[in-house]
Length: 152
Image (tube, rainbow, N blue to C red):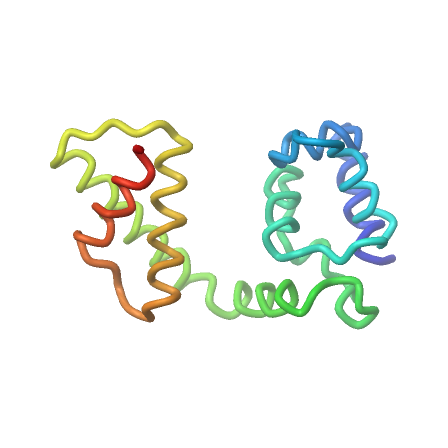
């Protein structure tokens, strides 16, 4: 089997159409069924981000989709690296994510800021990306800047 067949198999197990899966992944602009169809038929290499969305939506671990896929060139290099990093540092990533979420929650409470789930997610993603770029733990000022950007 290849990665596209794994996506299709998991989608069918979940009882979803290509369009329903695409919309559930947040790709409701344009034609989400075409995007899923490209992935299922291996006409388009899937990015790590897109595969993570599909895996989360279908409630499957990312590794489910990687059975021999890298060997056949069906996933992008960044997706393969993402899998390797996820498998080797998942505990560290979970600790980092927990730390970031805790900081964001504390700052929003201290400053009496109410966020929608989408805003909260944008702040967390912004802080994660900042930490990746700067290679260090985010300060309260960095998190507050991300909060300002998410709210306006």
